[in-house]
View 1 (cartoon, rainbow, N blue to C red):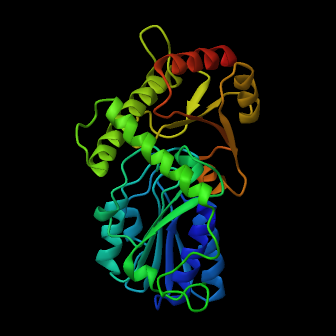
View 2 (view 1 turned 30 degrees about the vertical axis):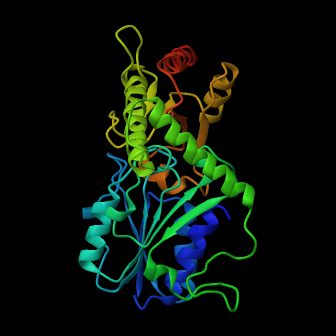
View 3 (view 1 turned 90 degrees about the horizontal axis):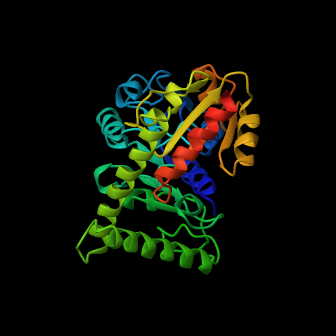
Length: 326
């Protein structure tokens, strides 16, 4: 199953069992969460509330959520990082606010975009589900992983008759997908050891340090992408370029989305492809419209970085954008 399928199953199951009369999510979210929320809220005649994100900061906060929560909130969804803007949110503080207002709410988090770019500390979130996709974590497509709380595991859900109460797997799983995921884990441990991030032999401790090193490296690359160097202008300094969101790496998870004046995003992507630089176009379709419309843009170019990218690659990217926009 993909991460999207897992989110759909979890959200559907939670909405069908909750006694709460309303469901809460945000407009920052991917259709992987808001589509099943909207669909199943309608089926069981519950209200679906969408929390608007801040168009200036491109994030949603606990304060934003607080205006849409009440004691009857039965299910709430949170996106950890947007795949359109790359901006991440404070999951722990949002979940804390939800618990404060409606303690029994089922809280489901879409961590698909965030997983490769920062530390995931589920124990500190007080949530019921967290979902990632293998292909976003250096692995393969059509394979998602969901962590669920003990109480979430035992709610009524689609399962094979006679299976354990907390069994969610349907049919035989793809062993090669598990193998690929295991290799990613080994790689991340190796990366932590290779970088000197940790001298510990405890896998969790090594991974915690690995994610910190990854985050630090990516932040440096994003800062370079935004601000450039003494001799090379960053995206924020190129006159024809408009950066989507704040000119800061504080809430960015390895991504900067931007526009070039007078050029459709698809044309920018094509021009960068010719220079052997891979980016993606985002437009007002069913994947991105709920984010782009509040930002007042029709499309944008998504430039992503990860721990395996280098300063030299970012410099080549900035030179290419400069040439294309001139």
